[in-house]
Length: 359
Ligand SMILES: [Zn+2]
Ligand SMILES: [Zn+2]
Image (tube, rainbow, N blue to C red; front, side):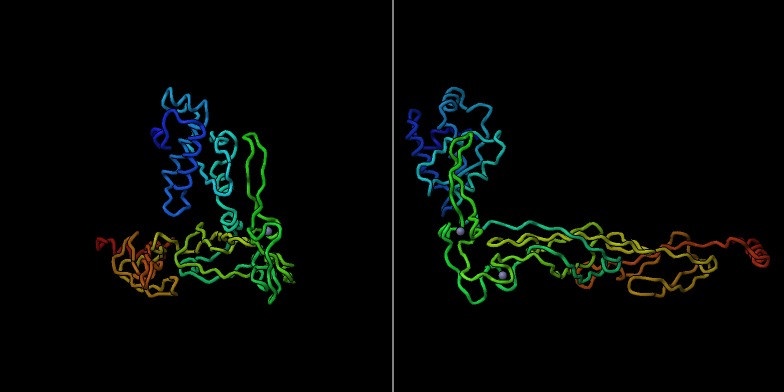
């Protein structure tokens, strides 16, 4: 990473502060990642070189030791000088330790107000729905009712009474942002802020929408359809894009729907298979029989073969969890032999006979 900073900026080792600054400005314009033909990696290199060489102490350290000392932060922040003519980047020679994110500041200052305004995004919201076991396996359409800031249906969010026009915001001249200079421990920082009059849209309705009073946003209960996919599991979360908080002039947040599934009384899930157990009679285990087994597809007749042992299983193919297309996992029945708790006299006699048979 420690390339020659002078080389990076294309200046000589004896370059004056002014020459360094000029070289940096030129390169920053050329390489800015937002520009056509910009180069993010090189831009960061240039920025890092400038952060060191524009600071007398760091430059001296660099000249002596080939690095600017332990406080070199890598220079993640970047910017472009467009619109800020003489802005002095040397105020930002150190990253970290000031409790804010360089990238953020530069983004706000130099990203261009309108881009920033467009990047505004409403908050993500969360809710949860409960499903019964069968719904979780086969998927289901659910409706949730949630009260949240939503785009006004009357004006579709622009805040104007339908059929009326919007005019350019006088406070920001339609840019959606206002610039201001703040004094901080780092010196003057030029910041852009979302225009509070038009909320970043750059436009003001002549005649406000009556439903939302011109806000473009209404806080009301909305019914949202949720398409729960087949095979969802307890604890999973669905993300409904754009169904979170709506904000004027920005992108709506997302709605996260947490899923809780009520367990089934007799069936449990194992990956794509469904497992249940069945108690069969001793004689059925010995001789074989037919049982009716409750599955998620209704009751299914199941043949128990003769000489069934405890722990044997019967597999019903295509009765498990849908796995895409028409494919499904298996429904597996674990067999258990229910021995009689008490034997009648006759039963005892018969079994004694069996014993003689060697069974
Ligand atoms: Zn409205
Ligand atoms: Zn404005």
